[in-house]
Length: 250
Image (cartoon, rainbow, N blue to C red):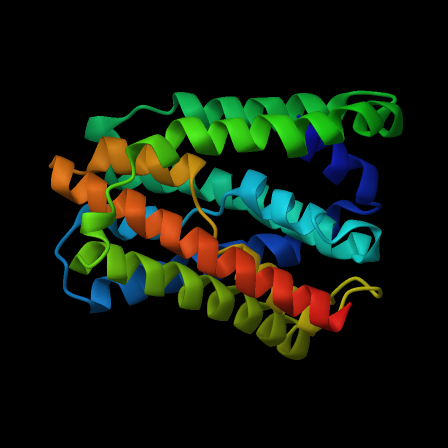
């Protein structure tokens, strides 16, 4: 709901979503390709694709008022598009194992937030609860209690870390550069390519939709264990890199 509120409050023109959507697509394709280069022969390639908006926005919030608001809006729009495209991937490639509850709930809540009135008033009260209560609780319950660090050296976990950290950064940044250079699409006037690169780093953080994909696509508990530790390590690395980069250019 918080995501929908902020996007609706910040977007002045509907066409402003086109570039973040294209960046989201590129930021999903590149991690999947990189993951498959490791030759794991695992369905976990799909886990490398989604962005976790809650984690990324939570880390972004640590920078406080020094951060450019346009960065937050671009990240939110990209992540919602990412969730939508993840649903498409599930429907096309994994329809025999279909369980869309988590992602549908995410998109439904975002839609509710998008259409609510009195957005600035609601955001003022919802932001602290979402950032400092809901996100830490969700991470603790769904990931930290299931981590097996003995799986950290597995091929799947290593492939997932590289795919998310490198693939998300390169896919999102390269798409923003390409489409703003060779098409009529432009970045918002108060957003730079360097700041988009920071978004690309933060987008390497994945948990909610990635875990949904993992649970419905992976066949063994060993694979799931490697995916969980891979997601954890990728989130830590991406979060730190994104935080340091955006703090440096702020």
